[in-house]
Length: 240
Image (tube, rainbow, N blue to C red; front, side, top):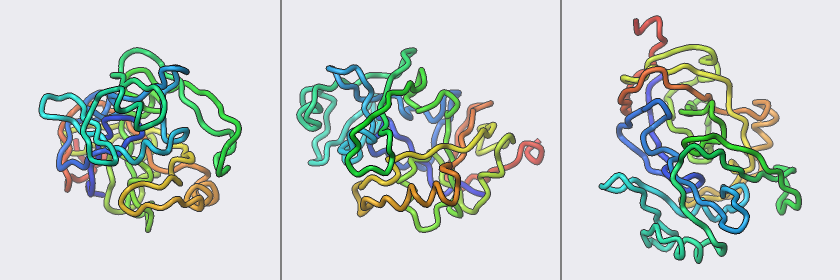
């Protein structure tokens, strides 16, 4: 399998940026999930599970290495008053650190207007849902007709078979990876997004029916390096 697409999502739950090459560090792609928006009143981290509007903003890394948030109307800002006005709640933009953030998910993932929410802890450092996720990969064979952006993977691979990578090591570009278990999916996969991605509750139902609720594989970074589109995924034994 070869790298078809590379994605970085600087701010959790916002749209990301497609890259031709990416620097893969110990904690994942440089700049990926390094910022998140938090509700000032509740202290909770915001995701598109709770605030679907987030998916209609986007984030990118600026020339100075800082983050830039692009609002749906095209304005570029990191002003928290402007961000608060957009989302209709008092928010702050935080940089990843050692804190363990708390998020919310609906008790019933398929409910159109959930009444009950569960709180859960994410990962310290970059704002991944789990400390075991540093890089996520999905194949075109698994995606089928689904748009890859529904699943927010860092790497989209041409071909099929990422499920078979579990427990293995491989080289991707200059980086060395160890693959873990598959990633549980949530209501975010059903959310509408810019670019013609409509709300589709059948996505999550199909994942539960055909994939036991799991889709895409997570990876830890054993050795940092640069990954480019077109790079071949090589099993560790073959690479050695």
